[in-house]
Amino acid sequence: METHIPAFVLLLALLIVAAKAGAWISLRLHQPAILGELIAGLLLGPSLLNVFNWPIFHHQEFPGMVFALGELGVILLMGMAGLEIELEEFLHARRVALLAGTAGVLMPLLLGTLVAYPFHRDLPSSIYVGLVLSATSVSISAQTLLELGRLRSPEGIALLGAAVVDDVLALLALAAFTSVVTPEGGSGAGGGGLLIALARMALFLVLAFLLARFALPRVATWVERQPVSEGLIALSFVSILALAGTAEELGGLAAITGAFLAGLGLGAHPARHAISERLRPAAYGFFVPLFLVGVGLRADLRTMSLEGLLFTLALIAVAVVSKIVGCGLGAWLGGFRPLAAWRVGLGMISRGEVGLILASLGLSTGFLQPFEFVAVVAMVLATTLITPILLRWSFGR
Image 1 (cartoon, rainbow, N blue to C red):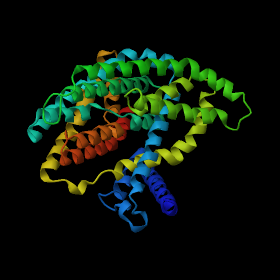
Image 2: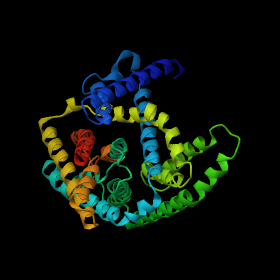
Image 3: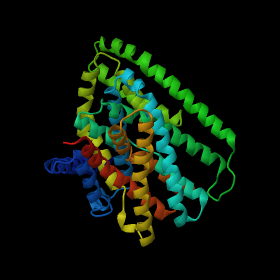
Image 4: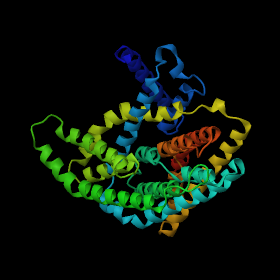
């Protein structure tokens, strides 16, 4: 592997330059910077230039390494999103977050199952497609709201809260489904696995919240007083990474949930703004661009057949409509005015890395066919591309 390090370093340089060039072009066209970064990844991916097949970069380890660095970008992005939130404001929006998050799982699950069944003609696999659609990823929306200066608006706070609820409910639904259903339509392990998963998630959320809210700010205060170079920033990185890792390994949740909780805890420290500003260069200068480019690098639109194209278009339509209607309706029932509820629904459209994780799991377990996997990747790309445009448009210039 040592002989490949120079080539890998050049690959990272190319991807970051492409991402920033795309961002510059996008901003010149008065569009969100992340839109250009995503399109840059699509151009460099297998759909067009296929950078991983260039002789200098044709090493089997490179894609996994790039995507791993991109996942760190997602984790840091969600940690910084938590830093921007006042806990009291977050709890104040709990009713809207609960209703929007719940409806944002049920509506895509129902509509996704209905649209997948005519193509697959297999109920368990069709339900799995609905489960994939129920997962959301607000990392794209969070960055767009940061660019607009609206992350701490009522819609932004409700959006992040709804995403946490959505994450928990979607993974609980996945645990329930896989515990009782097999890809062939038979019976799974039964309800015992579901109860264990539920207890595991609940226990982790409670312990992680208490740790982040009460212990982390005190530890940060102590570290800040120590004569260690950048000790507070090191603690911030460690906290975000540690809670992200334990969320997935021990809690059965997505890593972004743990990262957000860590950021929420660090946000209670008086130096929260200084922490955010010092994390920003590493996040936005290196890791986040690799994540955004990586979304496009995963998609190979050339493998799509006519049936796959029709399924993809139907999937994209359901992905957009189900989140707008479900989350928007939930936010409206929670007390938001129609315009604010509409913005919450738009912000929940993006599926991102959570959808890709569920799709990969479905492909490996047999719940998804290869053409459905490509369709899901295309849906993730499409929703990731259109979410910042619609969200920015909803807030106006």
